[in-house]
Amino acid sequence: MIPISTTQETVGSLLRDLQNGHAATVPDTWILQNEGDTSEAFESKKLRETASECGLNIKTHSVDDFQLVSNHQNSLFLCGKRVAPPAIVLARTGAETSPLGFSVLHHLESLGSRVVNSTASIADSRCKFRSAQMLSAAGLPIPTTISLREKVDPQFIARQLGTPLVVKYAASTRGEGVAICRNANALEEMLQMIANMGQRPPMIAQQYVAESCGRDLRVIVIGGKVIGCMERQSQTNTWKANISLGGRLSLYGNVTPEIERLAVDAAQVLGLEIAGVDLLFGGEGPILCEVNSAPDFEGVHEASAGSVDVASSIVSYCGDILSKLQ
Ligand SMILES: Nc1ncnc2c1ncn2[C@@H]1O[C@H](COP(=O)(O)OP(=O)(O)O)[C@@H](O)[C@H]1O
Ligand SMILES: [Mg+2]
Image 1: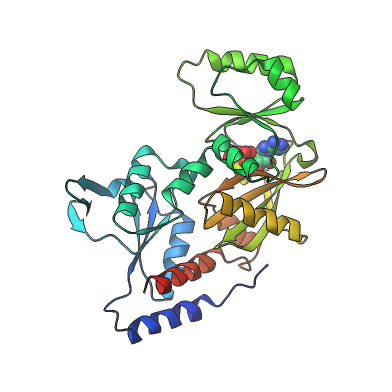
Image 2 (image 1 turned 180 degrees about the vertical axis):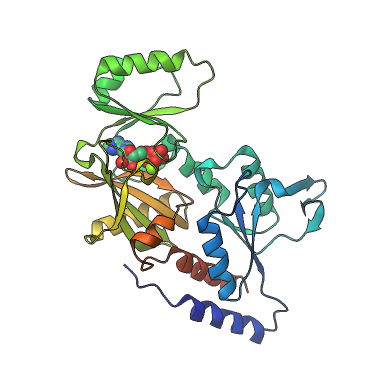
């Protein structure tokens, strides 16, 4: 793992360079959050504070603060007032990015903002089947995964995956849309129930990695480098390790080159410059579970006593981007 650079120094020298290059002002950076996020999340607040301390011009906006206009060219309005697009947009919308969110991100990209992560990479990583396709096409280890978009025979699924097996909403977050089927009958019942739901969201079935029951790893990758690795361990009887379901987070001390390589490769395959890569403990080594485009880091900050400083790493990364834009 790389040591965390002294962000203030790095970004500070960038700003000096900008002044020496007679740049009139430091270009703007925006943090973009989902509509309905009325209070600023820990992550956005920490990013904003860290960036401001380093002299960056940074503001947080919600996707529903904007009006998007397209005629012979695209233009952007913020609460009714025309605004110039910022140099960088840090998209914190993640798996919960709405159609409105995607529209705003596309608009900002078309206006020349450097959207981090890119709109395409957010869309790909937010769909568990799309990301499974991309990761497996790149030869990376994932649990065998079957799309349930089309009607699939439960016996076929059980034969392909064995039992128990896992069923997930393709855009599940916080473990809320993830369930286990202990045998083929349970799967049949679940698929029957889903079929009766009418308009159902895209879903997947997935091989269950029993060795990883109740625990997994969250590896934070920024700009192609691993900046921290945490273990999540369920404290209740659940097989899911999500923090939102009561999982406990601790610094993981056994980061092997294999773990690092896999996390970096997964982020790269999905085109994510900022990624929370979740790995399962497979019998023969780590296996990819999912890759998040807007990883939370409040828990990481607390559990690592600040030693995994995600906000500083992201701000440093923004500094790198700004210096390349000059
Ligand atoms: N195939 C699997 N085998 C074993 N455990 C799994 C598997 N998939 C998910 N899990 C467990 O369930 C949790 C939630 O699954 P995940 O796919 O990350 O959904 P979400 O995006 O809702 O968090 C994971 O953190 C992991 O602990
Ligand atoms: Mg997850």
